[in-house]
Amino acid sequence: MTTATLSVSRAAIATTITDVLVLGVLTTADGPVIADAGLVDPETIARFGNLASFGVTGAKDEFVRLPEMTGFAAASVALVGLGVAEPSAHDLRYAAGVIGRRLSGAASVAIALPTPGAEHAAAILEGSILGAYDYLDYRSAASLPKTKQLESIVVVTALEISEATVLAAAELGRAVHLVRDLVNMPPLDLYPASFAARAEALGAEAGLDVTVWDESRLAADGFGGILGVGQGSSRPPRLVKVVYAPAGHDRHIALVGKGITFDTGGLSLKPAGSMIGMKYDMTGAATALAVVLAAARLELPVALTAWLCIAENMPSSTAIRPNDVLSIRGGRTVEVLNTDAEGRLVLADGLVAASEEHPDAIIDIATLTGAAIVALGHRYVGTMGERGLVDEILAAATSRGETFWHMPLPAEMRPLLNSDVADLANIKQGNTAGGMLIAGVFLSEFIGQKADGSGPIPWAHLDIAGAAHNTEGGYGYTPKGPTGVTVRTLLALAAGSTGATN
Image (cartoon, rainbow, N blue to C red; front, side, top):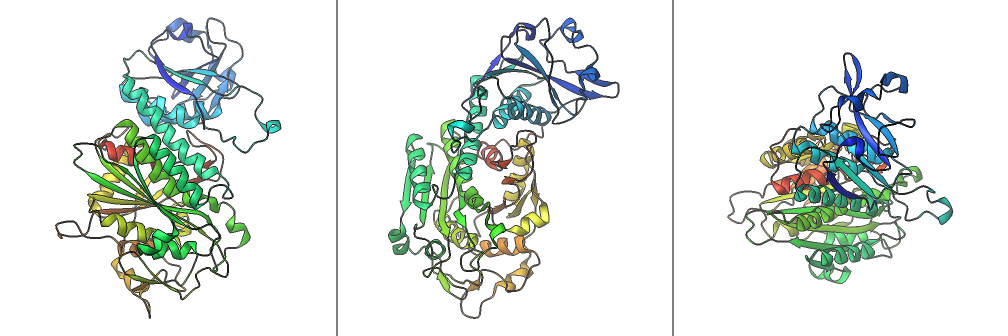
């Protein structure tokens, strides 16, 4: 996790003292040009001469460190491509992410990009801290970078930017980095009990109420899905509830996160190659935790409850078998036909527990199905559920520059989950069509009624199986590895900021 601090400055660009000063390059019909950041005079821009001579085009993800430039107080100057002639706030967030991700060997950076409005400055702050991420916890001293680590990010703008805006960007970065840190941890060290202990400590630090169910309490309270999935491991499962309830709130949202700290597939064992990366299967729980912590630090006016459904799915003589029947919280029974469809089993317990409190909305976040990757690739979040809530989430995602896609919950798929011996099965044996959708249909069975009995609690399911893990090279503010996807969208939803379209 980066420890870089964020700030803003209204100093002239040429006199800004920093290790690296970064300006933006626009892509225009007349070729690449330096973007007017508001605090740069024509003489300063003229010093760059013909940008093409530096191999600069202004394309997205382009970042070029220049030879020594005179007339600047900065030790060095760099250029980042903005990709367009008139960048939006999202374009600027993306470019600032490139800066944070590509800078190395610099302790401080000053970013001077166009800021026609406060939302543009906020996007630059946000993108830079999202991009400035490294995970070095398991590097030996010999393999640690020999260069300086980024310590200070200053956004240079002529605008008056509030401290609240800077704080919001810093906390958002902190939340995304927490998710990335937790997901990056090896499963040897992040297992149900240690994950629960980390959540307890972080919750206490933020002044939140945290409750942990160990295996005995899970059994006593009827959480058969979490217990069943976790019973094959020598490291027992946990359920963690983290509560943020500010005074005077008028909305309560429950976040239910899948927290499989490692997924072998259980007795329905995955092939060896498919098991690599299965430490990522707890991303949903990490996301729910990070969002509630950030909301508390930002004092958002909405109550949030995170339910972290944590287990390790291992094969052993004590593991559940295909054809075993589990009793979910509340009494509904599920025949397990595939132990590698375990995420929906732990989520079922969490969804029932969340429903018992009758929140205004329930959102689950899960690396749930490989079918989501087949359907949507690695950058889109499959989004399904009650249409009003889904539309609200999609608007929040658009406002934050995250890519979500609405998927249906076909009623005709429900009979595919019928079981000969239980209330329903966890898969349709032999069926490969619509796997992401049938998982969503399964989860919908565990959503409770509103307190007044007028219908089901509004619920949305976010399948992040593809978008949670960037398997290719970094781009924008997204590094290779865990992305922290949906954190920004869920915080925007919690803050009620769903109207912007930047």
